[in-house]
Every structure is written in structure tokens, then in C-alpha cells.
Amino acid sequence: MWFFLNILTFNCGSSSLTFKVFSVDQAENIRVVLSGKAHRVGVTGSRPSSIEYDHGGNRASEETPLDDHGQAAVLVINKLGELGIKLDCIGHRWVHAAGHFQTAWVDDALLLRLKALVPILPVHHPAILRVIYACRKALPKLPQYVTADGAFHSTIPACACTYLLPKGLVKKYGFRKHGFHGLSYRYVVRKIVENLGIPLEGSRIVACHLGTGGSSAVAVKDGESVDTSMGYTALSGLVMSTRSGDIDPILTLYLMAVYGYHPDDLMDMLNKKSGLLGISGFSSDIRDIIQRVGEDPQAKLAFEMYVYRLKKYVGSYVAVLGGLDVLVFTDDIGVHNWLVREKVCEGMDWCGVRLDAEANKRVSGDEIARLDAPDSKVRVLIVPTEEELVICWEGIALMKGKKDAAAVRS
Image (cartoon, rainbow, N blue to C red):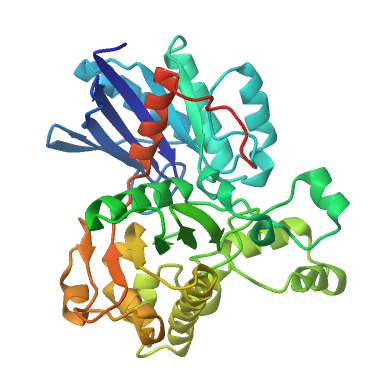
């Protein structure tokens, strides 16, 4: 048994790399030794790439070229060396495991499997692999592990996760709803239970993870995911920044058959040119769109569609759960945008949701806060998420050997 255990976690975004070093003692008390984020990784723009560090409250930002995520990871490892911070293992968020693993040590066999999963998520997966290989090269003897973002959704029942395709096809290729933002939801549910002092058993929670890129919603019963808006990929579900969300699949076939679109063109369009950007015509950021709602019809439409789709999913999950105890908002937009929360909760009295308008506008979004009115039957909260801490929890379990973390649950 260790006395202190230092775990470095990496969380790759499409153009960012979030990192934290957690120190864990024998009693499993956890504290953050260092944290930070690499910005504009692999991006050429008007502002330079940089890495920000927070070490014991001492914050610094360093401008530096960041051609890829692997390079950013090496700079972080070098910084740890300068600060004299020793590591026991490195953990990574793996976005789409397709049910092959939940949490597993990285070895040559797993690396082959991870490479095979690259086409499912061609933006994030190559970046994560670059970080893993960079860490292997810089610290060849240090163990690394990956934890699957969708493992939280492995409890979704067959009736909610099975696609209506020929069963032989579904079985052959393993098509099913896998879901995303699972690390975030696992953290949020745990914090809700702790904050409200309610038991998991019997609880009915709808959580909305609203990011500046991807967004999703989940229905949670007895602490387990029973449905979520994203599917086999992160494209389906809510209105997102540049992703289309739910559309009629025949539209893609029509564009190919009638208008000659190539599948690569459609992949690019559905993932990078649709959503808020496609409807508004000027921005993928809901905050920019809100500023122009009063003067731009397309901005107004984009905002209304964003709220409408989210409210529709929340309402459908209330029906699935047979009622609602807690409605929670998380991630950047979820915790910092009062107008989105206000519009989603508007007219939801039918299921017991009543928002305290002043409290909703007043909160900073930096900590857990209650937003429900005194006469609300449903508790409404914002909970800032902490995916890196969940990666750390998984690392502790692996190091202690408490579970077979490589086991498949499907």
C-alpha cells in the first residue's frame, strides 16, 4: 500500500488539453497538486497557443507553439520535472470505447484496440493517442490507463439503446446507443446526492451537460443512466455548436444520391458546419447568438431551436422516469448561462419545476447552487463538473486492484 499516490490526468478536447495532478493518501483523501490547460492546440488563429498552470495558487500562462496534443503533454511533463513532482501513473479520458472496456491499463494489445477505434471519433481519438505515445516516450516505465467516457451509460436498457436495424446487422457490428459525457454525469450525480443528502435508490434525475462544443442530456434512475440523447456517435441529440443533432437520416442519402455529395463532405458538414453555426450563419457559440437575438432573425431561430430541443428531451425523460426529483445543469453553458436555464425551465410547472428567477441570475456558476423556487416540487441545481477527478477515482481503483477494470459491461 502506498502512502502517497500522485496521478496525472489528461482530458483531450479537439483543440485543448486539460490536465491535473492529484495527490492521494492512504485514507483516499484527494488534493490537487497542479492543474492547467493547453489552449488552441493545433490551431492557427489571431491569438497564440498557450499553456496555463496553477500550482498551489500560483498561476502562470506561457505562450508557446502547440502543433499537437502530444507536444502539449510533453511540455506538461517537463513542467512537472521542473517543479519536482513525481508521478505514479497517468490517466486519460477515452471518449468512445464502443463497449470494449470501462477502465484499463494501456499495453500493446490495448493500443491496437484503441487504434481500431480511431475512425469512430476522428477528431478526439488521434489526439488522445498522441498524448499516450508522447507520455510513453517521455516516461517509458510509468503505467498509463484509459477510462471510457461512455461506461456510465452501459446500464441503459435494451429498449432504449437498441437501433431499429436488422438484428443480424446490429449484432455483427455492435451498433447501439453508447452515449457520452459519462464521466461528467457520474461526478454530477455523486455531488447531487452528497449536496442534497438524498439516497440514490428511488431518485429520479435529469442532467443537462451543455458545453461550448457538444451537449447532451441524460435520464438517471436509482443512480444509473436509463437513457441519453447522444447515440453511437456524439452527433445525435441536442442542438450543438456545429453538430446537427437529430435529423432524418434519409436526408444524407438524398444529398448523396441526388446532389452528388461525398460521404466525407457530409461528415464534415454534419459535424463542423451544422448546429448553431449552420442555423445562425455567423457563430457556433450560443453566447454570441444570444447577443443578437433581438436584431437577427436567424440568431433568434437558432436560440429558440436550442432551447426547444433541450426542453423536449427533458420532458421526454420526465415521462421515462415517471416523474422528476432533480433537474441539474452542468458544463460551461449549463452553469454560466442563466438565460438558457430560464427558458428551459419556463412552462415546466406541469412536472413540478419552478425556477427562482433572481437566484438563477445571481449565481456565479463556480460552485454548486440551488435555483429552485420555494414552492418548486423539483430541486433545480447547477453543478460544475469535474471529469478529471473521476479519471483519478478510476486510477485509485486500478492501483488498489479493487476491480477488474478491463471487464466489459454491455
